[in-house]
Length: 128
Image 1 (cartoon, rainbow, N blue to C red):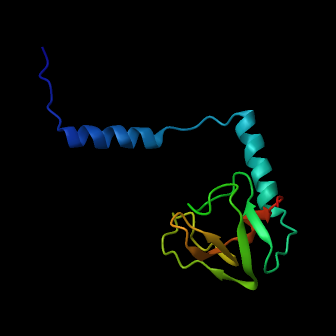
Image 2: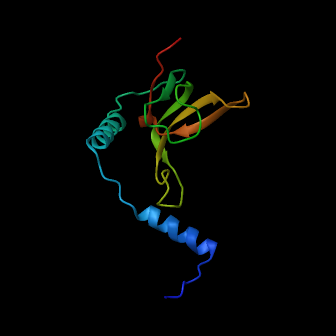
């Protein structure tokens, strides 16, 4: 009978995580359709927002925790020249993101805060 090789719990967890990260996702027709639709929404932004406009995330475009989906923000300024995010990590979703929209919203603590955003991720708010 062959001897069983001992492996530590940490080594087992690392091996499981590594194998999970190497799994490939089989692209389905629905996934391809969603990807194409999101690209179209992202790339087709004819909106030029002006101060005072209310905006919300486009469906599937939120890449920050705040504001929450469906929660309006008010445009402070739409910059003519975007600020390029200085995130150093090329593996980050924010790497070289063009930030051309200053939006204000009320955070979870009830405070008015202003963040920089990529305007292509937003649409005009349709509500009161």
